[in-house]
Length: 431
Ligand SMILES: [Zn+2]
Image 1 (cartoon, protein in one colour):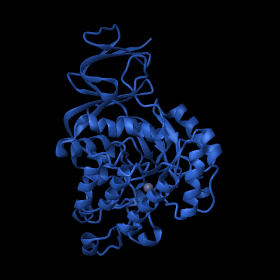
Image 2 (cartoon, rainbow, N blue to C red):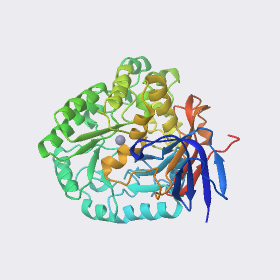
Image 3 (cartoon, rainbow, N blue to C red):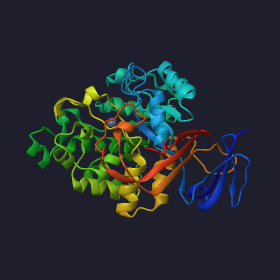
Image 4 (cartoon, protein in one colour):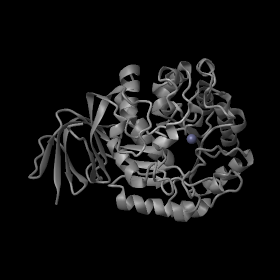
């Protein structure tokens, strides 16, 4: 029997009707009681009004396992997730081998159950065999093996015909396609957003239309088939506008964006002197895009915040900008960047941020949502919103220390995370 009493936290879980100071008694991993003046013979943690949220769920991460475990593995990825306040993540299939089979899907689930420390890992299967964009992968067997969605993320599904078939086939199993929107022919050898900054730096640009053209295609397919589709990492103003218009017409499209698109612009590549940690795909855009994406989150055009956690080894980033791998190690900074940018700087209510980080991903994928209610497993993020902390990439739990946020300060420090009933993270007080 183990008991922990979380005393005097500000419990905020809108869908459970929790919005105020309360004690939470966690007994053998389950929430045993919520109320005032609870008591225990076990451990007591005084929260002094710090916030208790339903832990976050990230529907877009890269865990690099199997095959690229020098970048990340299931265990280190889950530790990073817990340190970021997450109780569950969905991992993309661009591993080695690619997760295009039931065997790889099951390997990931079993490994996470063994070493995930309570963090749930939901694999996303590939749309096409080997992510080659030619032949459909074994969507049916992967769905039965536990894949929660399908995506060729990292690569677009360039063939409209293949996407047309994939949407119908995966819908047959009640799963969605998550589309990485990129017209490869248009993006060509571009390495950053096409525009003033790229010109000044002498780097080849990626036109915004490379993303926009494929968002338009997915909206058209979705409308014609009446089958839902999900757009990954929206970064452009036009993308947000098309999604808003499509949703108004009742098209069943959902969309995500990431902390870096709401907090940064391509200017940082200049101000940080070609910092390869700011290379990401789609690329960081201009200020008008950043503001449009924030507005898209505010008005419900964009449904969910994800990290696109993409850990890389130092060797993948300590090269010239044009040779650097794309991606940001994002799990451990997501909440503080989102909270600071959206709530502190743009007036978003905390309830809305919880919806975007805890509730939306399970709703889109049909997964169990974290709840703060008696009888539920403890899936909790305990956060000090007043604490301003400097990002220190060297201290990341993730093997990937690649972040353009290194050295920047944000509000909102994760102090404890309960995932699947287990204490998955506890802040190191000396850090
Ligand atoms: Zn992607």
